Image (cartoon, rainbow over all chains, first blue to last red; front, side, top):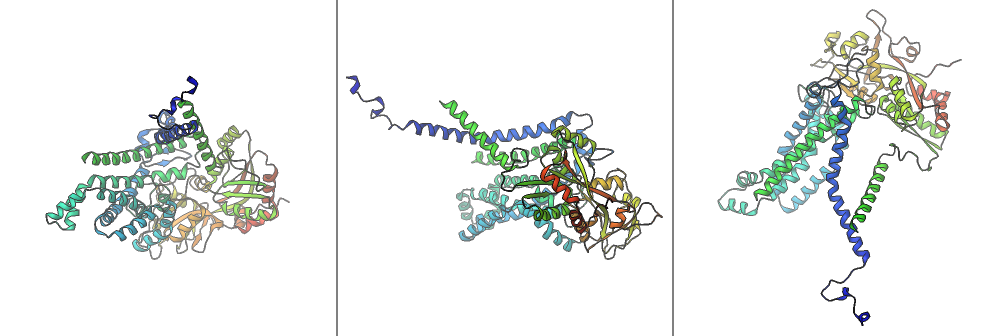
Length: 313
Length: 303
């Protein structure tokens, strides 16, 4: 009799059975997705580990002084008589170029974000967004080329500077590269302000400008700050464009028309020649660790700021 | 059941990743053996001074040996030598000699001793803008312009006024530190002292001449093959009072010009097959004629 009983899987309260293959495939897929999710953490840690591992031996070497590394301008990695590794000039170069870029980019991008989010009609908005996204898609080497050719001649013609590749050039080029990032994140932040705020402001008799200026910008301020910080992160980490547009001179600039060299450009220019595991090679990796820490702190701050916004609501 | 699945997917991910990494760095080892679509590829890398001639040779050689493709890239003598040490290229171009520790490193990495071939000569010219009234300079003056601690920062200190410019600060144009030209200049003009900080360090011989051509107050150094109509090559004197010599083929060959130097290529061990034929062809009459046409100085005939 028992042979005539239906198999247990056919009982009506069970879900219809699937083939073993389907179950197996689903599990595989599930694990692949999980792995890709976790891999980001793994890669960040691995990158930091490998960069730091290449740099670490120099920290304990006798001929290397961390104080000189951070506070001396003298960068002579291949000197015959007196090798010195001072990156103050490079740190100042990075700070000047990124600082100028942010100064130029922030008013422009916040302005366009406010315009797109609050003032313009839906058709113009779609058009503007596409163009701004297109701006973000231009490769950095193309920006560098524009800096090297068009912008450098323009700067020489307008300011009378002896050389057109300088802090101003790098700053303008980097600003153009940051604008799309800052604009799109800032626009999202403004869009995220609840419509009830706008309605309340208008009901109280505020003009559109007063609404933006007194209500929306304060309400979205943390989002706007995060947008600016991500723009700064982009500016600090950018390599190719600044390598081509800043003139590549190691020193502390005395004006925006002076050439400088940035941390990133220095690594790009010198890593190819430094023989593997030499002190010069390790110091370049140490510069990489420093850069990593700078951008990490900036991005972390931006992230914490954004989280702050979410918690407030 | 779960654990083996997870392992399998980890492994396949890892294999895929490795493949991607290898594909994106064809010179980094795992991809160096190419499919024989073209019979042989010769990888040449190094000196920016020699990029012009290396490319001219590669172009011409296509007609001589259609089955051999020569790939040329620059970056500086140091970059080429570093790549040769790792064994990722066949020929390194260098406008300076390999240093003993570089030779030792190459031997450690590859087990082969680099072999040097002098393929020509070059005069390292000192360039100023064509509007600069200066015509000659001594090596000491150059050192006080370029060396760390040197006192010359303005054109007036060299006794010249540049017409139509209010700020007569000297704009120093130099090379990135991987350049053989940079090291040659440091050794022979600065007497191994370091460069003053704040010079514009260009990434190629051509860029130096371009910047000097665009900047009235600039001074820079580069191979004499890179001269353009917007720049002027200075005559150099070894010491004040000695005659100043112009950088010409003749003066480079009889060594009366103070900054004449040899240009060399390095191979790992005694070259074989296609590389051997290519190096021999560079040294042949045809190869040397192309070298001369590119603005360098050919090797004088041995007999």
